[in-house]
Amino acid sequence: MDQMDDIKSPLPATCGIPAILAGPCSAESRRQMLDTARPLAESGIRIFRAGIWKPRTMPGGFEGVGLPALDWLAEVKAVTGMATATEVATATHVNAAAGSGVDILWIGARTSSNPFAVQEIADALAGLHEPPAVIVKNPISPDLNLWIGALQRIHDAGITRLGAAHRGFTTYGENLYRNTPHWAIPFELRRRIPNLTLLCDPSHIAGRRGLVEQVARKAMAMHFDGLIIECHCQPDEALSDAAQQLTPAQLAELVKSLPAGGTAIADTELESLREQIDRIDESLLETLAARMQLTDTIGRYKQQRSLPAVQPMRYKAMIETRTDYGSRLGLNPDFLRVMLSAIHEESVRRQVEICCKND
Image 1 (cartoon, rainbow, N blue to C red):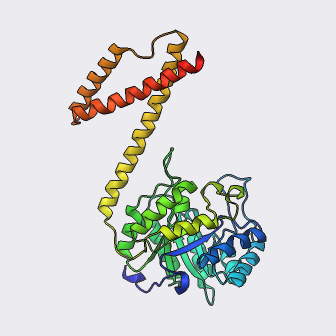
Image 2 (image 1 turned 45 degrees about the vertical axis):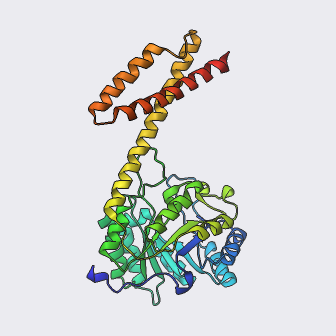
């Protein structure tokens, strides 16, 4: 996109490759901020992120400390030398954060989904003499044009230190990840704007700390320029998003294991096909879990009526009918027999276990 060919990285030159922005989901106290920031700085992290204004999906939750936390961010910067970053959603946020010396502002997924809100932020940025750098997260829905539109509005306000962050997309129902990656969308964004700094937010994609490293490694293998990772000195006690935050020590180990980032364009078609396989595999596992739950119900029924767990005629009929049906769908009969036998064995094991527990 020629109209955005003057954009530069929003990140300080000292942040490293890959670039890492780390810090708590929410600024909760001065001590929490410093206790998180100091070990991060010691491990080489050069950008400290923290949410100050945190509107939640449902009312009544912790919605951030607000303005007092800007002083804590400034102290982190003075004590550690790290650059600072926070989320903004209104013109008031922009003016307050910029006035306190915050280096990088990011626009969250809910805000980037709303062109009116993005334009309000753009207008506020245009009125600043020396505006901070800006990172725009993808909108909640998988709409590439909406994401590009948000970036253009910020760029049109005169912001050239501009980047994007991929944090996944909201999907209905239970899924492996909190937010579905849809990797093909950020890849297409990079194809359209090749010089755009592209970060990944594995914390919000994963939703669980046990999956953060997996997503982070995948993102760096796909040549993202860096990561935004939520990190807390005591993550289990965090007032927001406790499940997905790492300790500084865990983050340091994760960073050591990462491949270097780059700017090459990944194979978007291959990744799109792999993502479809991931969704199908998740559906298969969910269906299998539902089948096993029904197996347990049958096991309890048999136990109550003193019926045998194994019924050979039923097993033989099941194998024959399922193999025939699967063969007509183009599946290998030998593969089907092995798979169906394994499923039946697990079903019998569960039913026997139920009977033994109730004896």
